[in-house]
Image (tube, rainbow, N blue to C red):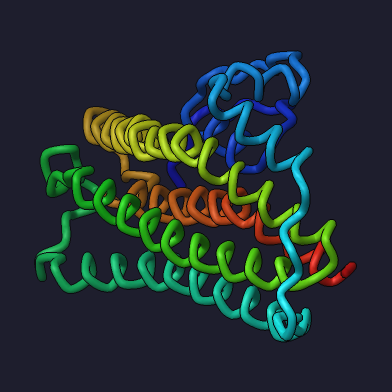
Amino acid sequence: MVQVPRRTGFSGPTLVRLLTRLTDVDAPDSGKSLSSQLSQWLGWADAIALSSALNGSPPAVRSGAQACASAEARECARVRAALAGAIADDGAHAARRRGQARPSMQPDPLNASAASVAPVDYAAHRQRYLSLQQTMETGIGSLRGRLRIALSGQAPGMARLATVDAVMERVLGAREQSLLETVPSLLEVHFGRLRQAEETRLANAQAAGEPATVKPGTWLNVFRKDMQSVLLAELDIRFQPIEGLLAALRAS
């Protein structure tokens, strides 16, 4: 199997740890508190909106709007399973498509070289990643709004929480989006390193007149699995607000 150097010992969200290992890029701990980092992300208008949501009178509880927490939990589980399934299906579809496109004449492992392996463009993988990001954003955004509506029908404290979450989504959503949009570019680094590592091994084996120790194209299967792991880790990150709102709904 094609391997590249992996960093160890970094603590943080799974998504950050994965990207740090796969791209060999340092991601040092900022050492700043959450409140300190938020202060850098929020403008004065955002701070006023958040303060109003926290300190203002809680919205009135709408009669007849109480929601069943178990029903919302089932919907959350359904959406998450559907998104995870879409990520898994995308990887399986890509593997099947590559298998169908593979020429009938396979390269000879004894004479395999970089030239004998058809070049693969990263653009298709980037587009698939961006498409799945959009699917996650749409599905989770709708679910988040649904949970806020459910919370707004509970006690005043829960209704206030729904208002605060709406403000947080609005003021931090753009920041989150800009950060997550960098993930495909980071994966492109991993894509190139895996391909180069295999090409080097195949070329060295050919130069030495020895059998290749890796099947040509193995690197691409490794990359697909790594991309799937990153997508699932991103799903975890995106689902954190949902888990918080659902926990509050259950507690109410």
